[in-house]
Length: 238
Ligand SMILES: C[S@@+](CC[C@H](N)C(=O)[O-])C[C@H]1O[C@@H](n2cnc3c(N)ncnc32)[C@H](O)[C@@H]1O
View (spheres, protein in one colour):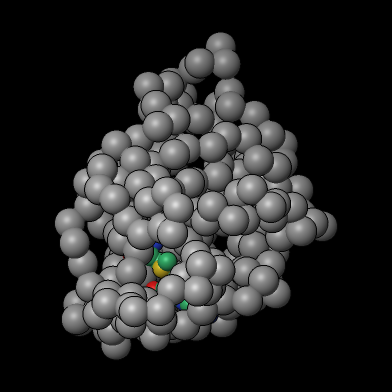
């Protein structure tokens, strides 16, 4: 098989991934670390993690916030320690050579987030820039892109673990306006799921927001498992 093989040959057990019967393909309202404690070690091939950064708004000291920014401020924010804890636990539940897709803000991308990967076998293997095709905020330039870091548990390899080779590293996709702060592009997430998993595999998101990853997983015939601490409270999507 060549490096550009279209096969994914990762072996892992299809046994139950959790001990308390958490349902698949359902939006759960639950704290993410508590949720992850019920997922078996070495059972998940694909995980998306989109932390609630304090990031941009705090760092730029915006005043004068609109309705959407006020909703944003109400979302549960994650400290550096909490993000580290999530990543450590995600590392445990993933299968060898499994992929973590981590959404990252501008500041962490530039200043570094190596500490979050400390004491894990996670390594950065790629970076995707999402062009949202609309302008956001900014005191200097106005934000139009977001970043997705592709991280892999050891052994790091593309052969047999990544089976789609036509995904550009700049991805343009417009997402419908939503009251939720950060809905991510379903089209891109679908492509990444197709690249790194097989039908019926389990896709995980422990801080799922609008559950865009769930929609992407179902649309690609995968099973989704995930939660959000504030599901239904702020988004009007019960
Ligand atoms: C950036 S948003 C995720 C957006 C999501 N990727 C989407 O496409 O809609 C981060 C989410 O993390 C949730 N969150 C914050 N702390 C959490 C925790 N401890 N456990 C689970 N979810 C948490 C917030 O409620 C928020 O919805």
